[in-house]
Image (spheres, rainbow, N blue to C red):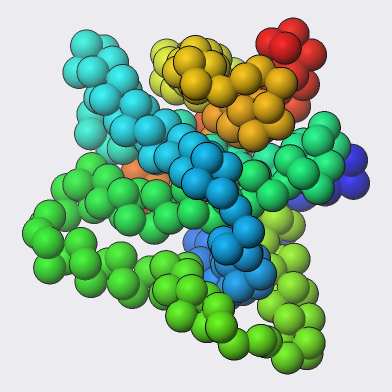
Length: 305
């Protein structure tokens, strides 16, 4: 509960800082850079290095990890078609694909899964987030950001952008160092630095969040289709798809469906802003999505099984 309250407190604090001009105009961009270069790499190094893949069977590994990738491709296809039908510009479509194609499987997801299913559920949630959502963000997310920002899309550019994306470099390093035991002091430092992720990202969202009636009216169709996909359509599809070969009583199955229903990813919103993909819309999608998901996810858990 404290983690969820922290999310709302930091968003509200960011909105207050924006309203009363307490922080400079480039504060959100500065916070985003710190998150990308320090907070996220620290989190990746800490959690990935601690995953023991040798004790995870194929069923419990591949089923969760595949979900975020399918979620992303589904969002890309669905929102690109809707965008073409509605006449949205490419930067708007890019912002929606990034935020609604990637779930908040860590900040909100870990807190909710821990509350609902404890340590058993968290094991699956970490796999979904680190090997699914986060890896998809670091590869496909970068590709989508480059494409919809109108930058040159070549394999050389893509590979360079992915390899120089600090969290991806940390992911590679974490896998390479798996056989090496980290000193306790290093683990403590990584844990402290990763702890800055939630407050700084949510503060950044609050600094960019404009929930005025004018902004809501301006983006009402974007919010309807984007959040409709992320919070309702996607989890319904995964419930039916995974239900074909998994039991509703299986905790892995339940965590997969609930993680598919989580709010849009905050870091994807930061990436959208970094590539100038409708930062106002990205912040709205993230802020409103988090708020709604705190009701929709527990309701799904209550009524789906």
